[in-house]
Length: 128
Image (cartoon, rainbow, N blue to C red; front, side, top):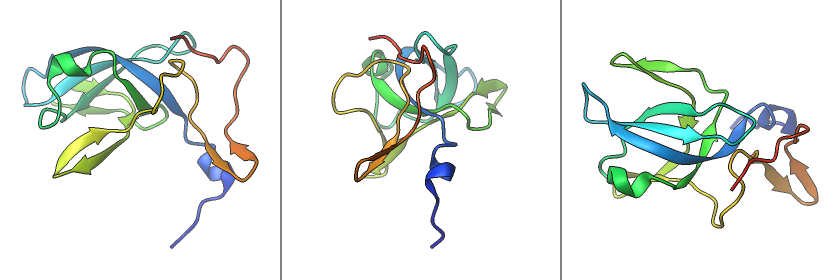
């Protein structure tokens, strides 16, 4: 196994986002989600196959972990910006989220011993 250093991990721009809106993709059986990333960044749009685990109305307001600096793609003509972190249960996607409500837009980092691996920029605080 090849290991990453803290410098590599810090290149991942992981943020807490909040799902603002969800609609059906017009051509395929997937959702288009609008993710609020707080006051520092613009909202992001993601195409995601979450129908097996979530109804559209149940996704609104959920906090998620969003990888902002992931390369955008187009899914049947709709831009999908970034990446949502998920795991699986019984073959269905389960969103990764904070276990407590936190500020929208804040960075997600890692901690090892007393060292926290992320950095905040001035004004980067998010909103509830």
